Amino acid sequence: MRNDAVLMNHERIHLRQQQELLVVPFYVLYALEWGVRSVLYLNTYKGYKNISFEREAYENEKNLDYYKNRRPFRFIKYLWR
Ligand SMILES: [Zn+2]
Image 1 (spheres, rainbow, N blue to C red):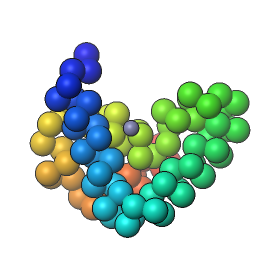
Image 2: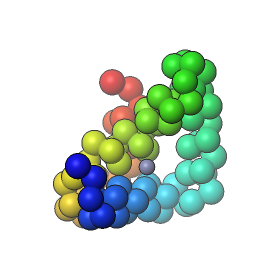
Image 3: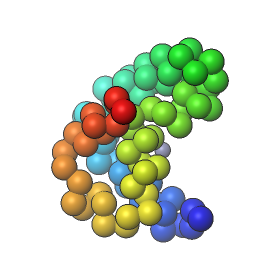
């Protein structure tokens, strides 16, 4: 279930990712990864869900303290699995 707290937490994780990448590069990488994955999956929604930033946010959004304890640049771990 995704309640408001979970959705807020998801966005909070993205804010951390943006801070680490100084905002603009975050969006550039986000768009690039979405494009590449959409081609690989032949599906833009699947492409979106598998962007490393989204994998990290979706997998940890229910842990409301995650953004406080996460290690910087943790999204890199979600690039390959
Ligand atoms: Zn997201």
